[in-house]
Image (cartoon, rainbow, N blue to C red; front, side):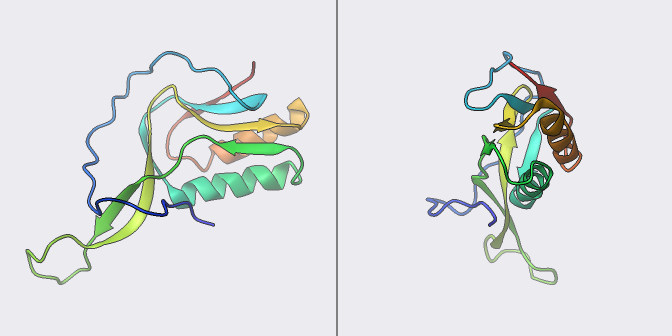
Length: 135
């Protein structure tokens, strides 16, 4: 169940730089506990799925998980030993832009002890630093 958009207008997207200064602290919308990014970066769809599975495994499929970010940027890659030119390659993987101060995951319906263990174990699979937040 890798996340990817159903339809895109252009294959090649300008990825640009992500500002690493934290924005205004965001609050939880749906859940009671969450993970907030302390650094900016790109989050691949397979990393997102690995975190979701880890959290789900720790909460024994009880409660509810919200994935706040969605991978919308396709990263293209041409195969090796291809000559220069000939346009862009196929989309290799999808990434989500995550800025510092953005909530990545939210969770609800589980006790605090279980939620903390689940979110911390999921945080180890993320490529940037995150912090657990509570209301």
